[in-house]
Image (cartoon, rainbow, N blue to C red; front, side):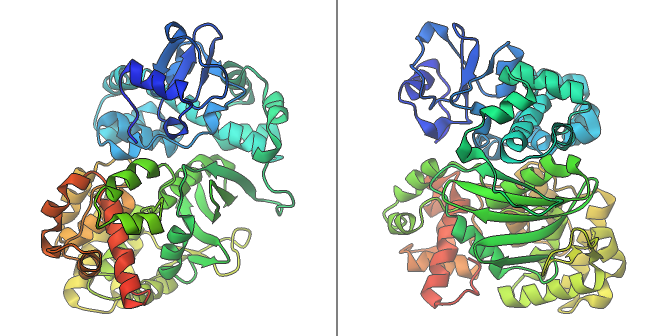
Amino acid sequence: MTAPADFAARYAAVHGRDARFDGQFFTAVKSTGIYCRPSCPARTPKPGNCTFYLTSAAAHQAGYRACRRCLPEATPGSPAWNLRQDTAARAMRLIADGVVDREGVPGLATRLGYSSRQLGRILTEELGAGPLALARAQRAQTARQLLVSTAMPVVDVAHASGFASLRQFNDTCRDVYGMTPTEVRGHARAAERGPAGVEAGTVTLRLRVREPFDGAGVLAWLARRAIAGVEIASDGAYTRSLRLARGPAVMTLEPARSEVTVTARLTDLADLPELLARARRLLDLDADPVAIDAALAADPRLAPSVARTPGIRVPGAVDGAEMVVRAILGQQVTVAAARTAVARLVDALGEPLPPALAVDGVTSVFPEPGKIAESGDAHLGGPRARRSALLGACAALAEGTVALHPGVSTTEGMAALEGLAGIGPWTAGYVALRTLGASDILLTGDVAVRAGARTLGFDAPRELVAETASLAPWRSYLMMHLWRAASLEKGQTDARS
């Protein structure tokens, strides 16, 4: 459900303690000097004492500290930042990915095509805080997760959260939480604490999720596509390698009903915020399942599927270049055939993981696009046109003429991909779905999509875009239901669901 924009609607959500809006806006209370999530169990403040902010950073800027009772920093991220395609939303995605910590405000501005001054003005007008304040709030949130979920020394928590110094970390904790880091850790509820007995050299914490959450469905999707050496899924867990700013890493994700346990093995602790952001995108954790399910179930043809699988998610990706390779090699072939082709490429060109990071079944990192462009042809099979398209796309990604980072809009990303030789609407749309978090993609040329549409009772599968216009902007989630229906109908796991 989209966060209400007017004061009366927001106040009604706060009065009703409506958890659906947690993370979508924050309530600052003048009489107490604190800010809360909408579902805070404390007595509802008087309307005259309330000010609403879209970001916790804006509340910090206005002088408020986080409520110790409802813990607003523990909420899932706002779905608006994935749904919206404007500059402010794209900036929020990049800030969550740690760009400001790595590249500073100039780097963030360059990625978005603005000067630092222009970007600061846009974000302050739209979100109530500039890029530095937004990044500081992101660091504070990561720090709190680490303080309450791990036994990491405070100095390591500061480094892993992106703070430049221990003093800066201490000051931020006092400003945001009204407590020292040690007090934040001691104040944590027992239910928030991470699992004990984790092996040395790892970081384990929990990410909150909006319910309902079809974590098992996302895990099944990823398991069917797991590439030997890079990823493995078994016993309710998914483990894969990924390349981060300071080196390779390995993460294990274990979805549950209302949270995901993340175990990270990192080259550098400072890469943790980037890893967590990618984990959230991979499992679509910031989606608004109540709004999505309500919209889809309004169509009687979809209602039974939504009832069977509430909280369906669109699996994301940890790297745009990797997803381009997998999408091109998956053109017009089965999932099994695509997996074999990708595994052959990884086996030949993948980068071995350091022994300290490798785990059973995950031993290498997906090859970089430049390496594939230079040496991949010898390890590719299939039609010459497909091989040429793959090598050309990898060259463009390596040169930076095509970018697929979180700050790229869906329209911009798809246009750049379709501008490359051999890449058509299906591939561009599939990459946008998985990499850019596009919520309204419907690949009507996909055989499994059409099969699923027939199974669920759509009369004209090739006219699905027009027939499902009322379901915008959630047709990516519609497509997940169609893929699943096709898979169930055929009694196999080789459909694209």
